Length: 243
Image (tube, rainbow, N blue to C red):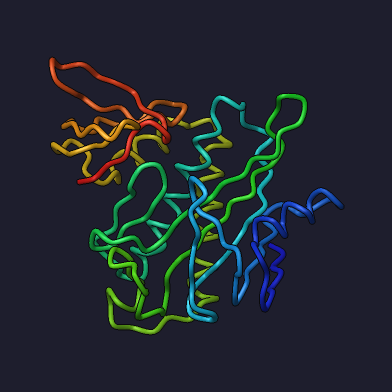
């Protein structure tokens, strides 16, 4: 594993993507920054973090063994890796809010942004970016955010937490390499926040509706049981889980 440590950068994902376009990058090359000026999350959101308090990381992984239609399994593996690493440090309860926000005590502790490299309609590599709140104790105007320190009261060594996440990530990617997709999917669904519980959702038109999360499709669509026992699938842009 090759680790590149940066003091400050606009985005670790952007840095690693540019690096991989200029030269051959070793599998599991890790870029970690003390400070990130333009950290990005899902749907164009901004990931804000105090310098030297948290993990802001991007990992380059060769995923050429996967077909494009199975790319969501990368997200599942990443979610499980962060979730299991947190549990190893006695952080709980931990759940995955679809598609890949990690919650601790029902507050967001980690976010993931995955950018796939595709050539000739084939997956080549994946740049897995994640932010993990470790030792930060205050989040301005983010009442739904938390950190490992806020949950446990302990101060953590960033490198130790990083290595735990990467170790877990390698474990789940290796399972995918064996072709046991169902194992990863079953584990992911067992970690889903609000799974099999009546929940409130908002659609793109702002309409609220009630449904029960039943799992995800192989391509990552959220499967929700709505009225009249209809199982409907939603992508990320179509629905928001409120609670």
